[in-house]
Amino acid sequence: MGFAGAVNLGVNLSSGDIIVLLNPDVVVKEKWLLSLIEAFKVKEIGIVGSIILDSNQSFIQHAGAVIKKNGITEHIELNLEEVSLEDNEGIKQKIKEKLKSKFGKN
Figure 1 (tube, rainbow, N blue to C red):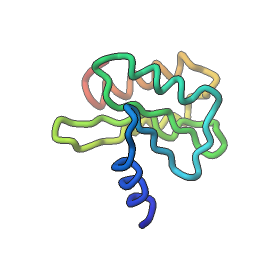
Figure 2 (figure 1 turned 90 degrees about the horizontal axis):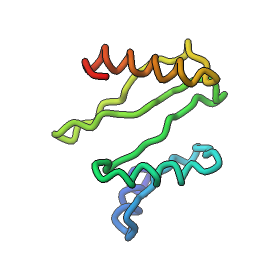
Figure 3 (figure 1 turned 90 degrees about the vertical axis):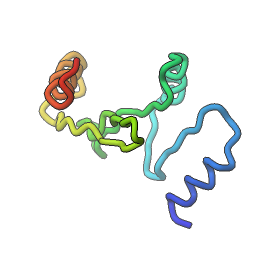
């Protein structure tokens, strides 16, 4: 069946309002699920994702995706290695700059 088949089966058999998908190698932090659920309180939000850190938990490996109207997804490649995770404002600014240069928006 594989991972994709298992995910599809699980989603098809689910009955909740929110479906959470995790890869088998994921390590979650305290209150991670509460943060994701909180985002769904905004009516316009239909899908939520987490920031993914590298195995050393020192660099952002993935910070989201854009889902286009046709359903095609595009990962936001931010290459944030040069920004320490200790510098939250620096990360926010770097993300804004990368998104603006890639998509022309703030």
